[in-house]
Amino acid sequence: MKKRPIVVGNWKMELSHKAELELIRALKNMLKGVPIKSEVVVCPSYPSLPAIAEALKKNSKIAVGAQNVFLEEKGAYTGQVSVLDIKPFVNWSLVGHSEVRAAAGVTDDIVVKTAAMLRGHNINPIVCIGESEEERRSEQTVTKIRTQVASLIEGLDRTSLVQTVIAYEPIWAIGSGQTPDPDDVAQIVLLIRRQLTDRYDQELAERVRIIYGGSVTPENAGHYVGGPNADGLLIGGASLHPQKFMEIIQAVDSAFGEA
Ligand code: PEP
Image (tube, rainbow, N blue to C red; front, side, top):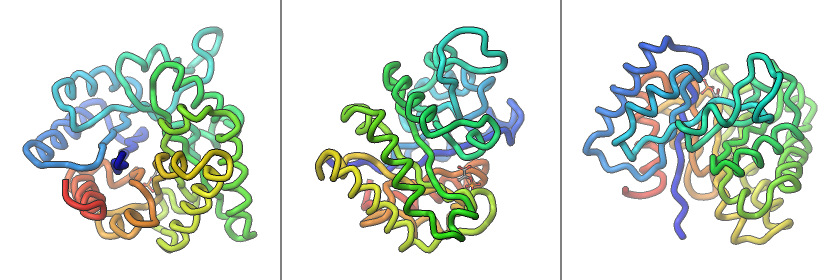
């Protein structure tokens, strides 16, 4: 089975509800009649999920994801959002984005349990991993990635792993305008695939989609995807601009051949 590239837009907390609706309308219009090879996912803020899902009801080209979800389904967890709340509206959810890890003390253990919980609800996790600036400087990148991937491999069964997207996001590259050398990203992709092969087999390792995120623009998008590099991209800032997001999708599409 041929792997489909995936492009994910993380809108964070950047837009008003009205602006999110305008953005999805603009994106829908841009994609109308254009053959797209990539799977496209947008992750609006929680309060906009129902309206965005409704706006996309008849649009099979764009799927909806949540930006996060709490591990527990129900209980005395003030301010948290349960999978049961997002389930009617999403097919995807980010898990362990570095901004969530930093703000909410989310550990690798919580990340993998959350990913497994999502699979139990038939929602596909996009698990974010990556090293900090400090870890990069002290040459801990490989150790960090190996540890995070090991935890995923341990906590998810084969079927869940295949449905999981692994997003390699060097924390220092997020929103900073700094980007890694595409060859370094290809090395990390290879490292993750080797780890998956060692635990399972090459077939599984090839099926799991590994994507890159961090200061992606229409100009640099094509450098990080295709061949030995990533199977898609996770986009923050540029996903707020329909034209830029569209150009990134097209860059990914052309790296993977025609639609
Ligand atoms: C992100 O938040 O996941 C991200 C990659 O952001 P940006 O594209 O703005 O660096």
